[in-house]
Every structure is written in C-alpha cells, then in structure tokens.
Amino acid sequence: AAAGTTGTAEPPKKFPKGVVLGKDGKPCRSCTSFAAWASQTKSSLKATPSTTTTLSQSPPRDCPPDVETLGRSTWTLLHSIAATYPPAPTPSEQSDLRSFMRLFSRLYPCWVCAEDFQAYMRKRDVRAGSRDEFGNWLCEAHNEVNRKLGKPTFDCAKWEERWRTGWRD
Ligand code: FAD
Image (cartoon, rainbow, N blue to C red; front, top):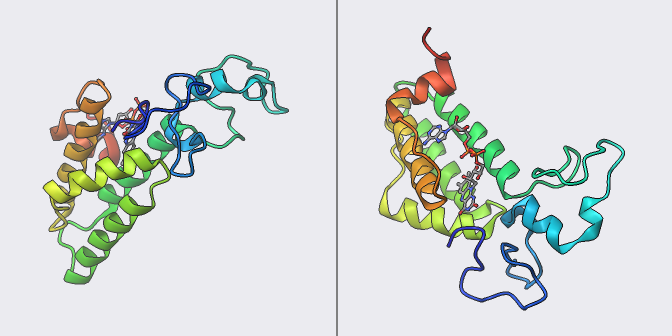
C-alpha cells in the first residue's frame, strides 16, 4: 500500500484522509505527508523558533521528517551509495550491499513503504555485481515507487549523471 492509504485497516473517523496509522494504531508521522499531518494537529501549524511559516507543505527543518522529507533524504543516501559502489566489487562488498539492502528494507521507518519495498525486493533480487548493475537496479526500484505515487519516471540511462558525475553540459 502507498503511504497516503491505511494499508489493511481504515483509520477511525477522527483521523483525516491521508493520515497513515502505525502498527500501534497511532498516526505514523514518517508514513504521512506533512500536509495531512498538519490537518490533524493544530500544534504542527504553530511557528517554531526556526520558522515563521505556518502553512508550509514541508515540515520545519528541525521537526521530525514526514514521508516526503524522509524519502528524499533516503533516496539521496541510497543513490549516493550506488555512486560510490565499486565498478568491480569483491564478493565481500557484494555481500555487504545485499545485507544492507535487506536490513534497510526491514528497518525503514515508514512501514507501508517498507512492506512494499520488501515485496519489490522479493520479485527483483538486488543486483550487486557492479556499480552499473546496482545503480540501474536502484533506479528501477525508485521508478517503481514513482509509478505507485503517480510521479514521472526517471530515465535510468542518466542515473550516473544525476548522482555521480554531474550533468553533461
Ligand atoms: P524523490 O522521489 O524523493 O526523488 C529525489 C530525486 O531523485 C528527484 O528529485 C530526482 O532528481 C531523483 N530521481 C527520481 N527518480 C529517480 C530514479 N528512478 N532514479 C534515480 N534518481 C531518481 N512515499 C509514499 O508516499 N509512499 C510510499 O510507499 C513510499 N515508498 C518509499 C520507499 C522507499 C524505499 C523510499 C526511499 C521512499 C519512499 N517514499 C514513499 C517516498 C517517495 O519515494 C519520495 O521520496 C517522496 O514522495 C518525495 O518525492 P520527491 O518528488 O521529492 O522526489
């Protein structure tokens, strides 16, 4: 299920649309967009010392991340790992990457995102044979999430320019 839905159970009526519940039955901040989160709590709209924005679509920089801030930061980390992964990794480096991705997919704080990502990894094994292989695997995995969320897909021929070398002039 995409964050923005409730997974298997519908939320009780008191939670506005878009607020995703955690497995404890309470609203899950890292599964919910800031806009949806703000609509269910007046306090999240109050200005903090670091911001005077009251109706922003993103959380203030010193607040816990919403699903989008967490996602952007995480993709930055994952694609940067791909960018620095060796072109010809040793068996031990390949094993480290597979272990990291398996644990990452179990620990990701947005549980609905994590469950879908685990399902994707069961269908498409992590390809860790080289930087090129992993970079393209990750780009395809990111595109799968983009499609689920109705976002444009990214041209995977350009993943290295976006995340490693910078754009060609
Ligand atoms: P992001 O998707 O965060 O992308 C950041 C940048 O990466 C883009 O600006 C672009 O330059 C580049 N990029 C985009 N696509 C690709 C690609 N295919 N390959 C390489 N570079 C690319 N959110 C939900 O609401 N529901 C979910 O179920 C969900 N699942 C997620 C699963 C994972 C593993 C992760 C890491 C995030 C997930 N997210 C989910 C968050 C979501 O993917 C976005 O991060 C969030 O919506 C913010 O999107 P954005 O438009 O800022 O760009």
